[in-house]
Image (cartoon, rainbow, N blue to C red):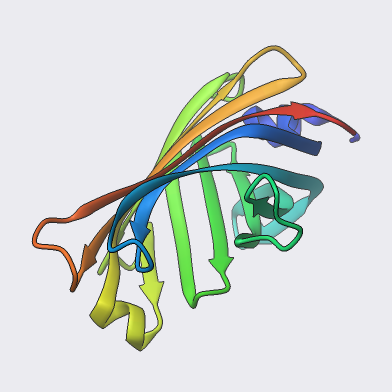
Length: 186
């Protein structure tokens, strides 16, 4: 990566990462209850940029993520998207798609040398928002999303993310959480 400082706090994430300490807490339709599922995952972050949006200049990471239950060969969750750094606004943005028909743009403030940062999105917002397909909007609406990232040296990072779901099966909102520690493998 030429001039890594252009990517601000995202520069340390460039590369390929794997982790097998994942924990997914979510509603299981099969069990009819909230359960915890262990998982392993692989994430790749490929640098790109600059992207010129008029006077806004962005540097980013194209990312791909897949997660598997420990004994499974097919992933139960995948994401594709971008992590973006706006140095002028001191903002990190994460835009991603989930193949269930969900699009998220989460935004947070960070300094260029930050080793930890937090992003957030809410449904109904035109910036930092969440969109869902019509079925999910009725049955399991994502009302809020947060993620906290913490870099651990140069070769590991952790994340803790929560998606608040409003589900027809439950009387109260569900905090669907995912967390893992990933290590650099490439």
